[in-house]
Picture 1 (cartoon, rainbow, N blue to C red):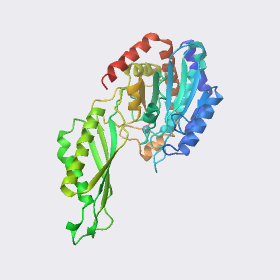
Picture 2: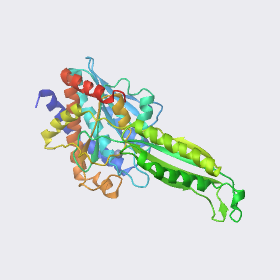
Picture 3: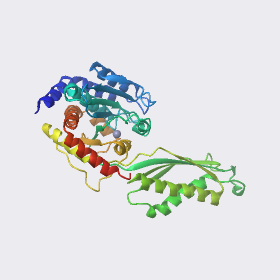
Picture 4: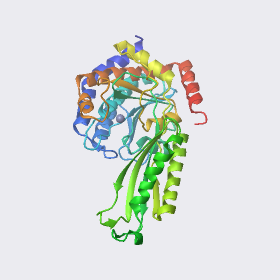
Amino acid sequence: MDKYKSIINDSIENIEKGLIELSQKIHANPELCFEEYKAVGWLMELAETHGFNIENPVGGLETAFKASYKSKKAGPTVAFLAEYDALRGKGHACGHNIIASCAAGAALGLSKVVDEIGGEVILLGTPAEEGGGGKIILIEEGVFNDIDFALMIHPGSQNLIGRGGLAAMQLDIEFAGKAAHSSDPASGINALTALLEVFKGIDTLRNTFEDGTRANGIITAGGEASNIIPDFAAGEFTLRAKTRQDLKEMADQIIKLTGAAEIIIGAKPNVKKSMVYAERYPNLTMGEQFKENMSLWGEDFNYPSPDMKLGSSDIGNVSMELPTIHSYLKIVKPGVSAHTEEFAEASISKRAEEVIIKTSKGLAMTGYDIITDEKLQTEIISEFKENVKGG
Ligand SMILES: [Zn+2]
């Protein structure tokens, strides 16, 4: 191992206990999106102790923060992204406590050599991945503008590099009608019937949506009593597609359906679009470098099989802005999915602790490789440009 990598290795081993405790504390104190005050407090405190400069709030978000350690020598800016939000009613069933500790460990480890090799290390606290789109807000607020490379990991059921993600968004559709006694439906306007037209329309159009699209809806309001014609109905739809463009086309078609329902039934539609989680372009050059570093600790990585089901995350939006990796570390056996009780338990297991230490080192060493190897930087950047062109 080269001299600097062994400094990184030793410095992460020195803080092993603190990193594991951090993960345990976050796991034991689940906080929902935009309310992650405790987790952010602990992360900032740890970074400050190691000489990082702290900014908080960041991008107008109280539970976002930027901890930076800058060398006097020029060089690229490498950011490790921490997530720390939990799921309503399920605690840390997505293992974001592991993500937070890995990002902190990587940033602290790399900071120990940055004075000599140059560049800047950032530990970026990104709140509200589970639905709030924290990273999308941070992008819009310019927080990623001075970052050159972004690295993070996510726990999962396999060690994977190069796994993509689908574009996703939510549509909230409401209809306002007119109440009437159910013995006289003609004098009312049935808002629920209008909403059901949208559901039927989606099923009718499903074959015309692009390959890989998904549209799933639920009814969140559909009337108060069956002897009254509902004057209000509301539905929530989650849409997914391979690209933002496919997603936009599907959303436009569904919005047209609300107009059709208005013509047929007479109820007035009101549509709210959520922010769009972009598809993901994992940087394979960076992923390969991470894989190579992780092999030092006996961790093997694969690429996902082509038919693997993909989720959606705001890391997709980051991957459209700058070279990004979001690699997966196995903490559960294949078949166990995130957002389950079993996953929450695994997020605090011995294996989770092992992942935190190995991955902190692997990420930090990948950051080191990027800062010190200009040829690698060029390859990463040209792959990035190739991926997002026209995107
Ligand atoms: Zn997650």
